[in-house]
Structures are given as structure tokens and as C-alpha cells.
Figure 1 (cartoon, rainbow, N blue to C red):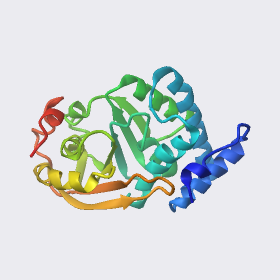
Figure 2: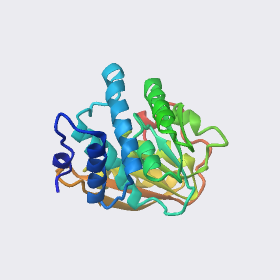
Figure 3: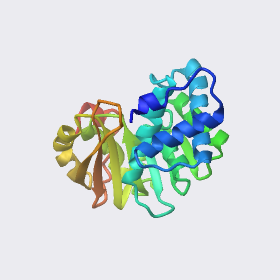
Length: 254
């Protein structure tokens, strides 16, 4: 079934039909959403459309694209998240809240923190949290390099996720300092995931991680390849990482 085709809606559509569309789209990838959760995503999409007209939060704005490329894409992480209740999750470079806030809607038991260095994006995420009354979620305007130097945040999270932030050798330096030993780092990647994982193996090791697997992800009806890079945290990251702002991107670990 084609996700993009499924999410197309006639010009006049009532909220119930929209929620049913989201429930059906999630079911295609094996995710069960309640009507309440789907209704929250409808409000999320409306807010995104409203704010994007003023602040250019995302280049993806069409209804069917938002559903497939933001909401359903974010929900693909549910297949690899630990099942136990109450895990702490950090989304690095969240943008307009993807995937972190979508995961919070789908898994209310998660304690979710989303961070981004762009103030307008975090202000939007804070509005989503407020409007949807997402208890146990927070959105912070901060650079990951600075946030990782806060003792209370370092080695703290069960799961750290990121999507479309940087090439993997750079991205793992942003992510792994936050993961507690025994925790999991998940990078959402495209068709270059296998190659990026190979180039990042040494950097992952230096940061206290170990590459577990690169798991392919398919969104029905979308031809582009996607993958989840799963990295286990096996030892604490040395205090000198992450390096100061700009260094991980300008001079990735080899």
C-alpha cells in the first residue's frame, strides 16, 4: 500500500476522517495508534502548517508528505525502542520535533527531551508540548556540545536519537556522550547508512560505543532507502568529548 496515496485527502475532510487516515497509515508499518493519539497528530500537523507559514520550520509541508515523511518515518523507531516503561529518551537536533515528540505521542510512557540550536524550532516544540499536554516532555534551546557538558545530562539517557543532523562520524560525537552505559543510540539515515557506519566504526569506539547493526526501513510507496543505525553504549565517553562547538563537524573523529 502507498503511504503517500493513503494520506491524500479531499478538500473538505472532517477531523475523524483525518485520524482514521493516520491510524491506517501507522498500521501499514505495524504500529497501532489510538484515535486519541491520531487526533494529537492531527493537531500537531495543523500547528506545523500554521507556524511554517511564518517561520519556515520545514521544507516538507504538504499533508501527505508530513504524514509519510515526518509522522510515519518517526514511528519506525518504535520497532527498536526498548519495550520497558519509563525509559528516558533524548532527541538531538530535533527540528520541529521529529522524531522525539511523535514518539512521545505514540509512547506516552517515555520521558522525552528534545533539543535544537535554533530558537524558533524549540519555541514551536514547546507549543506542541503545551497544546497536546505532553506530560514528561521538554524542549530546550541549546547546542548539543554545551548540553553534554552538564553533569546531570551526561551518561543519563536510555536512548538517544537523531535524524538528518550530520554524517555519522560527526553525529555520534553529538549523541554518545548522553547515553548511559547499557543504553542505545539510534541514528536515522538514508541510503548511505551502511557506508557511513563503516566510516564511523573507529569514532564510535573512541566514544564508548559499539556498532550493533544497520537495520533497513521501508516506507511503502516511497522509493528512497532508509535505515536505522543502532549503536550500543558499552563504556563511558571520555570527558573531552564532545569537543567545542564546530569541531565535530569540521574535524570528524577518524
